[in-house]
Amino acid sequence: MTVRIGNCSGFYGDRISAMREMLEGGELDYLTGDYLAELTMLILGRDRMKDATRGYAKTFLRQAEDCLGLALDKGVKIVANAGGLNPRGLAEALEKLDSGAKIAYVEGDDLLARAEKLGLGSPLTANAYLGGWGIVECLSAGADVVVTGRVTDASVILGPAAYHFGWQRTDYDALAGAVVAGHVIECGTQATGGNYSFFTEIADMSRPGFPIAEIESDGSSVITKHEGTGGAVSVGTVTAQLLYEITGGRYANPDVTARIDTAVLTQDGSDRVRISGTKGEPPPPTLKVSLNSLGGFRNEFTTILTGLDIEAKAELAQKQFESWLPQRPAELEWTLVRTDKPDADTEETASALLRCVARDSDPNLVGRQFSSVAVELALASYPGFSLTAPPSNGAPYGVFTAGFVPAEEVPHTAVLPDGTRTPIAPASETKKLEPLDDPELPTPRPEEPTVRAPLGTIAAARSGDKGGSANVGVWVRTDSEFAWLAHALTTERVKKMLPEAEKLTVTRHVLPHLKAVNFVIEGILGQGVASQARFDPQAKGLGEWLRSRHIDIPETLAYKGDLV
Image 1 (cartoon, rainbow, N blue to C red):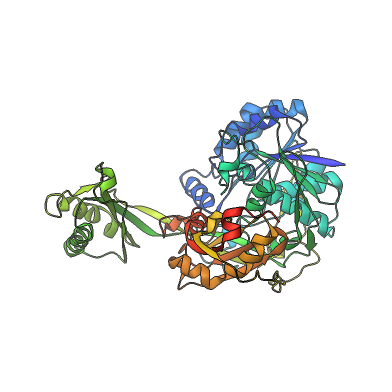
Image 2 (cartoon, rainbow, N blue to C red):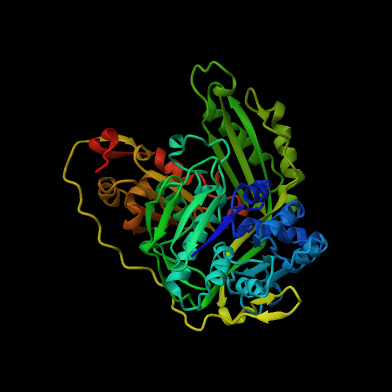
């Protein structure tokens, strides 16, 4: 027996037509959507400050208005975390569509009113990551649509699977399998070729289809997509997504800790990848809490430097600007981006960019006085001075931190279609989350000739943000390649290849079943994505930067495409 669960959203802003595409493209039992991320919670928090009736993903409501009738006709139930900070508000808005659908919602994740009492400070938003049992309760009561607040991304897939098969809360292996399947499909087209290092090997990337998990009663699954859609589902695309935003071999959720290190991937046909063997353990006794606060105010400007003496021009602009400022902001960062080329045949390729970013708790210090000085440089600085755009008046920026509270402190509640409120008890069995012991590494390859080449010659990568830290998963496709990678790509090597990480704590996790090594780089993103601490604030391109760096690769691997 198999339950077929499709996904139609990987973030707030994803392809709005995806819900209809998934409903019309083939058979489904459930359709899920993930709309929430750390930055999204801050955006919704600002929405709620302006209008207390908002705080949910408005695009989901538009999708439901267009597609809810179709879903009912096809017997497809919808589960989504689009409720954000206001699942009740979204449920009430869905009721007003008068579709005849039975609407339920899950709440209790919002801890803002008790944040200080729980030791979480005074944030703008404070939301615990809930599990899937509230969703199970809603589906058991006959709901056609279940909307939630801040559940874990995988919970919107785990809930329907657990309901469908009647799993118990201690069926850890089955639950872990559903979490892994959920983790693969929750980011939408990242499982079907999106953000994939070897994208040039995919025949049709014009419009990748959204993924589907065919989950079986033991928790194993096949990842696929609707026939005739773009992209591809391969061991590679699934591996890449499986490595996305994890830490090590243990992947904690409120209902189960999934052992990522035990998952085995096999190609099961065209655009079909089987995930099997995933082991599960009791969940940790605490729930993670997403905390967003206003960190202060931020402003920036970028100047164009063209032709000769680029560094001298940058030095003059910086010296002038800082000396002209009436009062220096708390943070003032300068970045010179050398995009210029000598003897360039276009002005653009002869130019570099100088970026200045300011942050302060006082909006006045990064507001008009900051912008005015940048403009005043126009006729008094280096030759060819120009700005890419006029500076703004500055804007507030957010800070993300993670908190933890005992699970019993969170009032996880399922609100059924008839309005009945059903409390969801926390897990009765828990296990403290601890890192796994290092696995046995493969036998090192013998001494052999090497060639200096980009790591990406043979390795793929996927990276992303985890608060202020970044996760970078690197994997290869053959055992021979892994025997090299596991010994060559150490934490010390990564620090040398990524100088921005040189002084930071970098932790490596080896995942032999996936032929992968995973790195967590602590603090490289400052105070999280909303603080925009670096050029790539979500670390989406960090893995591709690592792939572009040169390393000594065995000649037989680099040039002969070893398939042993």
